[in-house]
Amino acid sequence: MRISLNQLPDGQAAVVAEIRAGGSLMARMTAFGLKPGRRIRVIRRANWQGPLHVRVGMTEIMIRRSDAQSVQVAVDPA
Image (cartoon, rainbow, N blue to C red; front, side, top):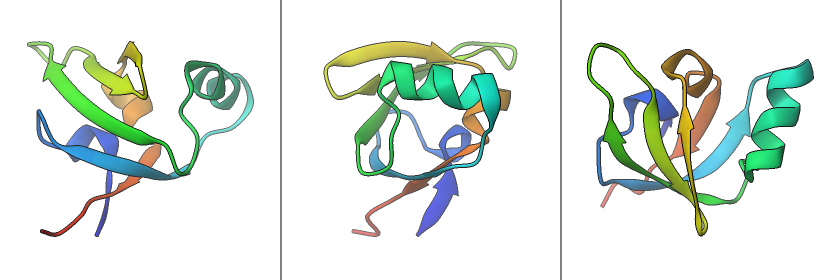
């Protein structure tokens, strides 16, 4: 099942399936290590529609929810 990163529940891991971004946003995401095939986990969500705190590999980053919508992840249905 594929969902956007901002829909992934806290604590759940998934695999980046696709990034639907262009230009500078795609460059920033690639620099953070967000690439198809990488494992990603949502650690927590900030209040008031704030950013997501995620772990990609061994790197932890904060990503805006609007940017997280452009990242499609594959979730294991188990």
